[in-house]
Amino acid sequence: MKRLMILPLLLVMLVSLSADAKGWGKRDWQWWQNESIVTELNLSEDQVTKTNEISTKFDPILKEANENFIEKKTAFRDAQFNPDDSRGDVIKSFDSMWDSKYKMKRIKLDRELDMKEVLTPEQVTKLGEIKKEHKEKMMRKHHKMMDKKSDKKKN
Image (cartoon, rainbow, N blue to C red):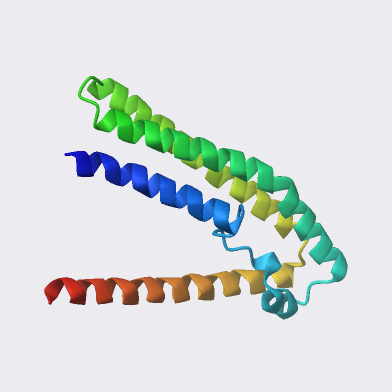
């Protein structure tokens, strides 16, 4: 039972350390800081400056939202395994966690929409294609990793 309670705590600590070690937003795919994508989109210096300004504006907001989400997630895990918390307490904590996750996603959407206003329609289309390719690549990588884990469990 202690292992079950320690695991979520360790995961939260690892995520926190990972975020601190890399700096805020480094885990989030930031296309505007990828030189090859900037070149492929043919962004002007003005567009690069504006996207970086937008990113800088949203970084502290996203950091705060992420910290809030981690706090709510920890509270949910605590409530989930606390025998003194009622079903209603756990559900309330769960809803609060997902509300904070939604707010974080909404902030990212606002950042994306602000950046979209800086791009030309052609650049928006091209960026969509690049993002789709990136997502497919990451999914292939994920499935490959999961296949390796599955193979290890079989042996």
